[in-house]
Length: 331
Image 1 (cartoon, rainbow, N blue to C red):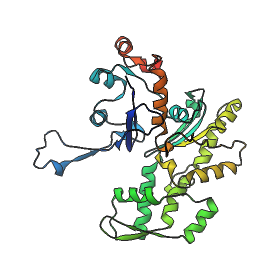
Image 2: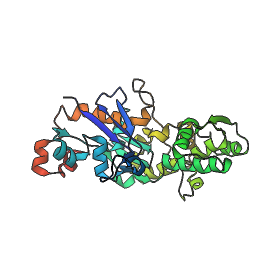
Image 3: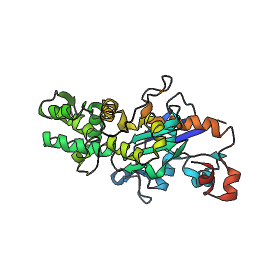
Image 4: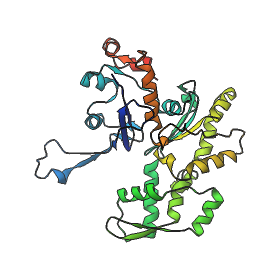
């Protein structure tokens, strides 16, 4: 029986059979439209409620998650509602490293609703040195909406319009100096909105990427992504620094932004600290844009190990111990 791997993010849910060298067969929005239980069909569309089952990396609405997945929702729901035969869960950081063939290293996972920086040693996340920041693609979308609003105050841009513009045009400057120059003079590209209006995208596209390295642009009193990673590694025993530094993985949809990896590597090489992260490239046989779903690919890899070797949580395990068994057999 083939295992199914599910990775539910704040923006997208990735699911499919465990085939590591292929992308997930199903990628759908996590956000849902729900109707009040007492709503009649005649006016239902007028009272749709937008629900986000996953907010900044945490499941906030289990009922909505159940409706979204229809066949999955972590240990208790899976066994009690859907009568599955086996279950396994793992940290996203560990899975992202598995995707490139590593069991130790650092992951910088920048998703829709959050940024996780994690250190992993021998397949175990070092919680004391790992950090989560409420800064992700959603915040960059809102920033771009603000910037475009300044340039085009009379144009009505929906968040979905801005999201598409961000995905198409957002990028990172080579360094701080290049960003400052682009703010003064920047080539522009024309973009046609769904209603036919045409706007020009210029310096705004670079402001979005720069916010990851200068969070002050977002009004946050925090260091940039490279400095945050260096700080996380510095809290780990020095004997582990090398294996962490040489195995840094960038993942999450936002990390696939044009120019981000080059800017990250450049800032890392110029870091004043003795700790200088080095980004690891994925194997050539892995799917393109691996960073967007590296945790799912890692899940497909580990599924090929834990289920055949009976290392997963079985129905008998669950019936005997309850949901707490997941902490003994997983992670």
